[in-house]
Amino acid sequence: MTNKHKSSYAISKQLLQRLPLYLNFLKNYADKDGYVSAPMIASAMRLNEVQVRKDLAAVSSTGGKPKTGFATEQLIRDIEKFLGYDNVDEAVIAGAGRLGSALLAYSRFSEYGLKILMGFESDEKLIGTEIAGKQILSIDKLPDVCKRLNIHIGIITVPAESAQEVCDKMIAGGIQAIWNFAPIHLNVPDHVLVQNQDMAASLAILSKHLREKLEKKEEV
Amino acid sequence: MTNKHKSSYAISKQLLQRLPLYLNFLKNYADKDGYVSAPMIASAMRLNEVQVRKDLAAVSSTGGKPKTGFATEQLIRDIEKFLGYDNVDEAVIAGAGRLGSALLAYSRFSEYGLKILMGFESDEKLIGTEIAGKQILSIDKLPDVCKRLNIHIGIITVPAESAQEVCDKMIAGGIQAIWNFAPIHLNVPDHVLVQNQDMAASLAILSKHLREKLEKKEEV
DNA sequence: CGCTATATGATAAATATTTCACATAATAAT
DNA sequence: ATTATTATGTGAAATATTTATCATATAGCG
Ligand SMILES: NC(=O)c1ccc[n+]([C@@H]2O[C@H](COP(=O)([O-])OP(=O)(O)OC[C@H]3O[C@@H](n4cnc5c(N)ncnc54)[C@H](O)[C@@H]3O)[C@@H](O)[C@H]2O)c1
Ligand SMILES: NC(=O)c1ccc[n+]([C@@H]2O[C@H](COP(=O)([O-])OP(=O)(O)OC[C@H]3O[C@@H](n4cnc5c(N)ncnc54)[C@H](O)[C@@H]3O)[C@@H](O)[C@H]2O)c1
Image 1 (cartoon, rainbow over the protein chains, first blue to last red):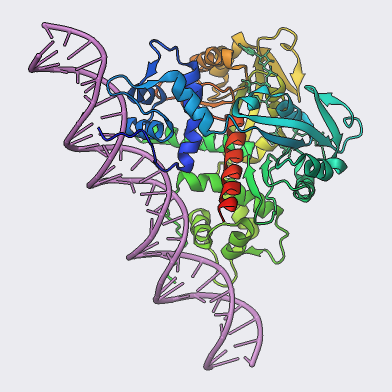
Image 2 (image 1 turned 90 degrees about the vertical axis):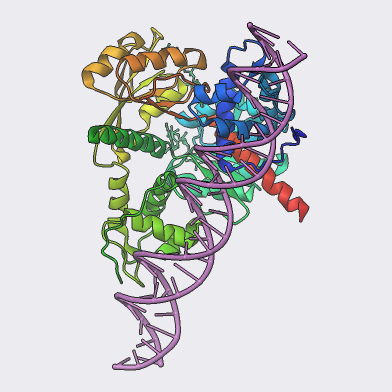
């Protein structure tokens, strides 16, 4: 075999989205003998076998052994490393309402090397309090604090009406990537990344898929 | 022009994900004269012009007018219709903790014709209470209630340890599509759709994109 | 020790999606 | 009117992504 386990496959955006799923699966997978194979993962996760094989080849540092598969623990480490487990990234959140406080309290971000440092609010009753041990500051302080601490990821969980305004504050504070939960299109300069997380849309898409599936069944 | 405004383009999965973004943009778009054009949307949303044109052609019932564009209100209605605004879909949620109660209280689902009817819990203190006017019942009742009300969408916001167990209950209740927020791979029979919403992963991917962008800038 | 079954890795083929290029239609200005 | 401009719609080309096929490696077994 010509495997130099150099794994110089291109990583596609789709692969990037599958990696966390592999990770969840592998972490939960009751590890018989310390190895997993691509066909096994493929059948459990309902994916194409070749796709899994390529995905693993793209991120595995060691490659797999024919007939045996990949060392589970190593594979988990490789995926985590790939996703940035080791470089810690800091973020702030604007809007400590229902969703914002759920995110502030969510511990699982740290598994990917992410840390939400604090929240920013406009509600006087919330400013000065703590959520899950994290301070809630006035939204007016956001630009300065971000600049001073050199934070470049911002999360927006304020109502849609305030989202653009808060977004502008983040940009003024040097934020370069925004995770936006408000159901609104944000205007940002070229160099700023925006990832929209429109939850209602996600559920709508699932429901549409379901409807299509049911219709297809009727046809038969 | 050979436009029979029949718009028989194929709908890709990617398009399905872009539609809600168009919708957010259009709803917010200060409507000068009642029309929007594909090039205008494209430049505002940083998308390729042809892509927008094809996307709109795929969902627009009327087609657009050269030089003028698409009637904004009509376009909004067309997209909403496409996404299922008119067929109401009902769902239940398991786990009325921080995230679950945020979702229960989230009103925006109704904009896509979705309705979360009630929540199910294992915590005695929560059972019998209401969140945002929606009843919280014992998780044990989930299968019966879903069967009786003929509900086929379930949302999982319980801790990862309980997710599979809750998932099984949903399937026993005839649920056919599951929106899973627990960071774990769910085992389901063939006919059940699962959409995973691994939030930590989403943030991790954003942070990875950011890191790549910064690295690219350094190269230059 | 060779045989068989199974897994990897790589190349090629098939699909899916995006982008380009161009022909045509409507508007606005001359 | 005629013309310049801008937007649409569409077929073709370019990319990206997934799936099929095959050659090779190796663990387990008779
Ligand atoms: N609740 C959900 O499940 C959910 C799901 C998806 C998206 N969203 C979106 O997330 C956002 C927040 O939702 P929520 O349910 O947490 O709402 P919420 O009302 O509970 O919280 C919003 C918070 O933002 C704060 N806020 C308002 N203006 C602000 C400003 N200018 N600066 C700083 N803080 C400000 C408010 O004081 C409030 O605490 C909304 O845009 C909503 O559409 C919510
Ligand atoms: N908080 C977040 O921002 C966030 C983000 C993404 C994903 N998640 C995931 O969503 C899930 C819930 O997160 P959370 O922060 O709301 O946690 P939480 O602890 O606040 O809520 C979990 C709720 O589930 C209930 N529960 C536990 N076992 C149950 C069972 N068998 N049947 C019914 N209900 C049961 C608990 O009583 C609790 O109320 C977790 O899997 C978490 O990883 C949370």
